Length: 241
Image 1 (cartoon, rainbow, N blue to C red):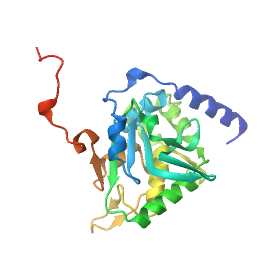
Image 2: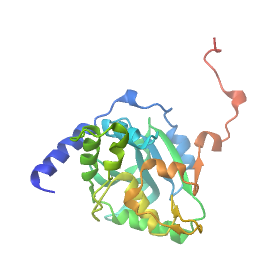
Image 3: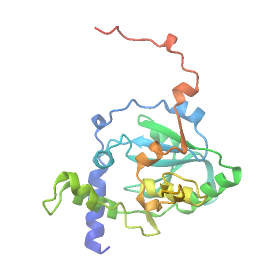
Image 4: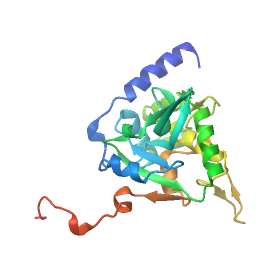
């Protein structure tokens, strides 16, 4: 990518990162409840509020616009951090962040089933090794191409022109990063099946946030329910009219 493209990509990423608090349709998650339920290896999907997030939700016909991987406690450059997520951020690249950063957002926990301690260590180690990588700005140009097409293609066919990411090894977008991490232990997300029911692993660059939600191989964890929700104690502000 040449200098002009990098500058334009940087400007677009800053513009598309601006948030609109009215863009979320889901209820903000109780982050303390999430903290009590989440485990290393869990995928946390986020309904973002930025212009970029709105575009992702529209393109994928999904509530979710961002994918993070919860890794718990990690050590980076000799310093230990707790309650950590690893994610590919459109402005900052591949980073680690505290779970508290998700306060105020609508989220969903998707839990892989049957991972051993060795599997979890492989996931964590690989995710940490990707820290410092770049966000794939090709993804931003693809979104712009979709939303403002140069050629007069009907809207119903524009998605066929869209290819998420460039596939460069040092770059990633949020969902492809997490898919690549699970690829290290051959964990299925949405594999392709032929007529003989033999499965082929999809390339990690083809995944979007919604794929973790619809995957039959991830258990959806709802913190409010997990912590013992009792509707008898639910307090309504008023009765329906």
